[in-house]
Length: 251
Length: 290
Image (cartoon, rainbow over all chains, first blue to last red):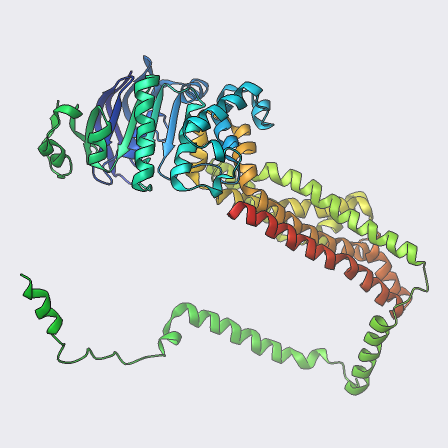
């Protein structure tokens, strides 16, 4: 369970990015955050694992306020949160399996991490995950040789290696073709359904959000302008999200 | 509705827009260009003004040129060893190579760790400023001078040469290593930090594999520089090696046959070095850039 209360963030230049954002996300659900470019979607997502430090508010994850954790506790909490990105952020000069094994680094001792000492079980698990995302033939290929869709699936496998409770997906399909998009979204959907994970996705595409998400949050100009189940969201609600001075309709 | 685009296609502008008159004098009005041209002109004038002062009076240019050609001919067409043995020259060459290798290796290890404190991707601003300014200071003083400074404390010889060369190598490599680390996308590091990965695993799992090709090529370039320095300090700071032999052959025995032999020996090492470094670089860069 993730609960965000009155989160606000102003960037150094004085630009307001988030204003009193509150939302709740549940295990086993896909929550899509949609809204125009510059609405604060990325800031919101990156505040959750504190890659961006916000100004005020509360982020309750597993009953703990992530904002109040010390360095060590934050590292531990981060290890339970997977994250995938629009531009994948893999280490291109390493192979698929090496990238996936990075997901287990947070559990290892510093020395074992530095020297890449992975156990047989970890390697087995990595291969299994690579197989699950449909890349068994590419396990020992360099990531620089993979296509965008394949790289994103490596990113997902890397996150799964963390055994995460929650996945943060920052525009995961923005650079992908339709076929790869479907593949990635199906995998994310399955993670929510079968592994009971909490999935938060920043999206540009409304139709994808409607197709795969249980819950839609509309963000515009740093404020939540829509919050409701996908099933109950009307076309008018969705359109309103993209109108810059939409009336605040928090459900 | 359909006729509209057709109508537009039919429209031909009555007259073409007039081309603005081409004005090339803007170059001289540009302030930056004016400064650059001004500096170049100033340097040319000072150079021309000083040329007469460096030609000593009473020199017969024809005879001098003839002598130069003769010496070059002796050096490169009749290389020979007379004052020492060929074996000892090879030994001296190996000594210089060893000096260059050792100083590059030690320098690279120190520079790697210091570079971590000098990169925007890893360190706080104040630390970067301190480290980068200290390194800039070390770099600003030439290698030979550092060797001489250390020879005050340690005496002329190999020790001062090793420390002086290493010192300058560290400062040089920190700069280029830190630049390479800076080129890493911030998000790639963020991805691993977001997984709760600590600093040292991050260095070994993300930074090393990504920057290895550029680290390798820079280190190789520095090895070539250090070899040239090792030859120079052999002559200037009594550090031994092929530079000392060169100094003796030219300045002490005036034996141009031997100078030629030494030059060929040095080339015999530097040319393969250049080829290997080129091959290494292209191989690594290919793998990383694919």
